[in-house]
Image (tube, rainbow, N blue to C red):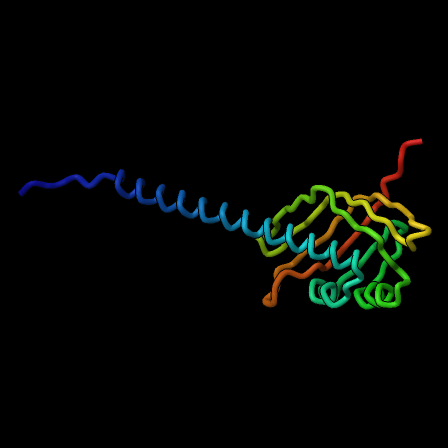
Length: 157
């Protein structure tokens, strides 16, 4: 009777292949999640500019908090009400290179970036440039924006 040696090589090779496939799949999934969040950021910016409260209602979590550049904190309801009443009216709202950082295995994301906006009437535009942080959380009905904070970028004197 001849005893055959069954080395660990085939087992290790199988494990390595499985790990590489899993890593490639995770990388593709990360790319898809980042693309989805980048699109949601564009959707949000467009909705802010147009005063589209229906879209914002859909994108924001019920516990949403909005911290503006002066430190005022508003709830989802307070922000949407101000937009509906045109107490807060954007003439433009343009994002500059948002960066998406996935957290908790892709269950949440932190998006940072800069933006330029103009508020007020056509005859009295008020330009603004700021840095922002937004937190998005994946929920059963899709991604929801739960937190937004802005800091004004002032020109150097």
